[in-house]
Each structure stands twice: as C-alpha cells, then as structure tokens.
Amino acid sequence: MTAPASFDLAGRVALVTGGNGGIGRGIALGFAQAGAAVAIFGRNTAKNAEVLAALKSAGARAMALAVDVTDRTALEPAFRRVEAELGPVDILVNNAGIANLSGGILQETAESWDSVIETQLNAVFLLSKLAAASMATRKRGKIINLGSMYSYFGAGPIPSYSAAKGAIVQLTKSMAIELAPHGIQVNALAPGWIETDMTAPVRTEALKAMNDEILARTPAGRWGQPEEMAGTAIFLASSASDFVTGETIRVDGGYAIR
Image 1 (cartoon, rainbow, N blue to C red):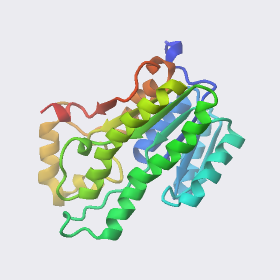
Image 2: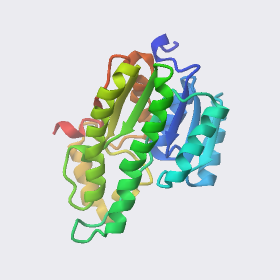
Image 3: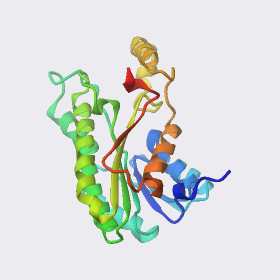
Image 4: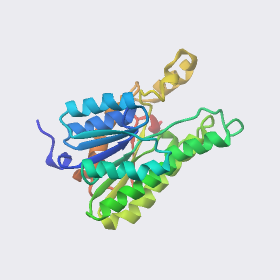
C-alpha cells in the first residue's frame, strides 16, 4: 500500500540538524523514505558518513555537512551550500541539542548555561531565520522544532535544558503567527523518553530507579525508538499539515497524560 499523496515528500528538500544520530537520524531517514532529498548537519564526521550512506541507500539525494550549530559564522555558508547542491530548502528540522546534567542552578556554570542555550535555542532562531527568508520567496515551507517533555515539566537537575525547551514552544508559536501569511507552517515535536545516546545514562543500573519510574508512568510501558518520531515529522513536513501551525505535538507513549 502506498502512502496518501498528501504525505509524499517527493521533490522536497529537507535539512535536519543533529541528523547523524538519535531522533535526528530517525527523522532524516523517514524523510528519505518519503521521497525527500535530505541534508544533515552534524559535528561527528564518521557518524555523518554512516547516515549519509543510509540516506543514499534509501534512494535519496543527500548530503552531510560537518557543522557545529553554535558556530554562528558557519550557519549561513552551510545553508547556502545545501541550497546550491540540493535545491531550495522546503523543510527545516531544528533537532540538534545537548543537555548538561548540572544538578541545578546552584551547580550549573554560566559557561554551561550559555552552551545549552546557544545549541538548543539560539541556533533554532538563526537557522529558522535563514530558512524562512528562503521559503517566503516561494510562499511554501515547513519548520519543525524539537521540544521535550521538559517544555512542560520542571527539571531541577537540568535547568538550562528545561529553559531552552520551554522557550521552543513559545518561539514556535511566535514564528507561526509571523510566517503564516508567507505560506510557512511552524510546529514542534515534544518527544517523550526515546532511546538515544543523550538518554543512555538513564538506562544504566546507576539510574535504575529513574528508569523504573519512567516505564511506570508511560502507558506504552517502554521507551520509544528514534524512528518512531518520523511519522509525526513526515505529517508536519507534508501538505497533509498545511492548516496546522503553532502546535507542539507530543510523541511520548502517553507519558504526559499521567
């Protein structure tokens, strides 16, 4: 059975930051399977190469660039390179992120705070600005930001991460209002507990109590897989969501309903 035409991404160009692992990789591969050309930004060249090979194996035109999204001077040249080689960007997924388990504001340093905010929030603003300017000329585009369960819940041990993810929800709404007249929809995904390198420490014996609590609270009774983020991302990237904007959609196995 083929997917409905409204979910088809053929002819679209997608850029996924942090696309060389975890949720970003899952979304990038999902886009490729839906017919999009896909570019990824990632700092690790070996991981970039692995995902690039997987994208090409899926039949996609693809490229992978070694980009640190906190390097502001690198963003525009990298974005322009994607557009020169693959075509105008139709879909931007702001996925790149880091977390610092500082223990709270009494322990977190200003340097650590700045690093998280620069990655999780400032880079989203800067790349969205570049993408929106390009999309507005064609009166079409999709921007998808990555929130978190901590967009809604407090997180004492990781205040910088929680602050950035909370801000993503409001930035998404603000951009949605501004960009709707240009034919651009802006939405966000709020993943629950997904098996990635970032969340790996929680699945160790040292944090067994926390892991047990997560599983008990999640009605699905398990952790999510990165590829399980792709379906909702494809919906938000496709014409099926042309009348959806400013929303943050939870993909969490029911974690937030308890």
